[in-house]
Amino acid sequence: MSEAQPDSDGSIPLSLTRDEAVVLFEFLARTLDDENGERLREAAQHDGELWGLTRLLGYLDRTLSEPFLPDYQARVEAARQRLVEKCGPWPWDESKA
Image (cartoon, rainbow, N blue to C red; front, top):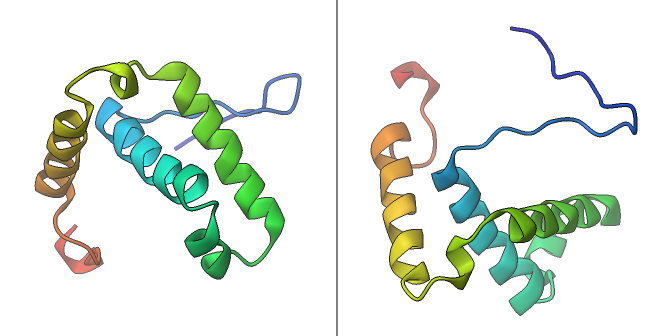
């Protein structure tokens, strides 16, 4: 497996499925925007981690059209379900991989 090489500006490419992107967007929007990051602050070891997540949220916000669709919540639920069907319930059990 080859590592992603940084672009000339130091950024790296990121590849997500649409389901992963929609679910991440919903989670980050809810926890960073709606709750001002308070629950994530408890899990973060450094403010830089929160800023990294905020940048990811901004990227997803610019990339996805789903948050602006009238059936957004249904799409989020469907994406969540497809991920669980594909990956299994959490916590991930490496012995089943």
